[in-house]
View 1: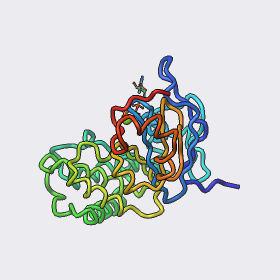
View 2: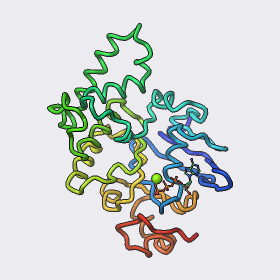
View 3: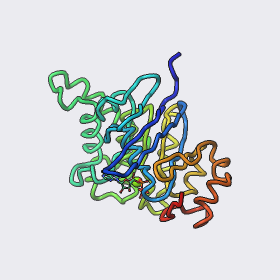
Length: 261
Ligand SMILES: Nc1ncnc2c1ncn2[C@@H]1O[C@H](COP(=O)(O)OP(=O)(O)OP(=O)(O)O)[C@@H](O)[C@H]1O
Ligand SMILES: [Mg+2]
């Protein structure tokens, strides 16, 4: 029977030089999952997200989504299948307007930009979709303003707008709250709550408050291996995780903790 998991990682492995950064990682996310990926610096979290998004090629293992094997697909083809990673502010064009940025990214990632011959109707539909998303995020009034004139928090909302406009079935977020003042983290959370409930989200996050608030499930990655995975409270309270990890710097901040397994 076909697996109905939104995302399934089967034995993913990746070595950089002599260093095994991803070690036989298995992970399953049901549709609608809100799943945090946590672990010390250098644990291999971003690498794992890169393997899932298609930015990095695995040495072995598979990336499955709704029963389909995406392992050999390009990053862009995965986007078309509904597997979307968050965009970094560094990929925004500062002088272009909010709407132009969202439209450009959406066109680029859905391949419409390369198909002008079939274009106008698709372009118009996408513009409407982009405006709808900006309205949902309450930044539609700023749609004609250059991105560089927005606050940092709002710029991150533009990244989220791009992701929303792409209608992901599986969303990968690498530290979405990094560098955002706590007052603006709420904006981000509100935006994330507006994603369809069936969208599965895998979120790398160091801020435990945000993890507790948003994620029902947690996987702890240490030295490229899954140390623990399950419901947030169970994982946070597990002896192994506390010993290896939480005990060293308190429960609310993981960043900077060195793994010793
Ligand atoms: N392209 C690469 N080439 C060589 N080594 C790499 C490459 N990318 C990552 N690494 C190494 O792989 C390990 C895991 O890195 P990764 O960025 O995945 O960790 P992380 O868990 O995201 O850390 P952080 O919390 O600091 O973001 C690190 O030792 C890093 O130096
Ligand atoms: Mg990282």
